[in-house]
Amino acid sequence: MCLKERLRAVYSEVVANLGSVFDQLTQILNNQDQTLLQQNEVIENLRKQFPIELEAIFLIASRVAKTLQGGNGGVVPELPVPLPETPQVPV
Image 1 (spheres, helix red, strand yellow):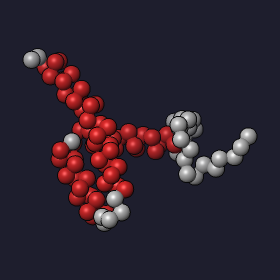
Image 2 (cartoon, one colour):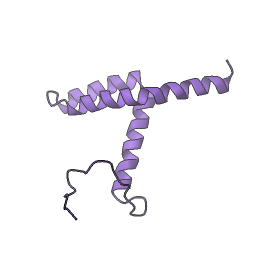
Image 3 (cartoon, one colour):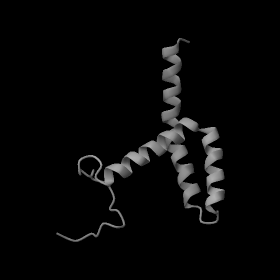
Image 4 (tube, helix red, strand yellow):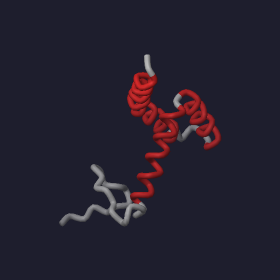
């Protein structure tokens, strides 16, 4: 297998894993039975298994946060669900 084919295979695997890794991370962060230290330990274990995927998720999260704070010239993307801090006023 040439380098180009290996890279495509790795890219495909990483993209295929993103949803599952995101779900695992969400479960960790939503687990109220763990301390922050315990959550960090579990996240580090997840990072050992999926280093590229977890880094990609954190990068995406930071970009989304920056965008929502107006870091893209003040344009906020339309989200499919209302955010809790956004009052829903009928028009």
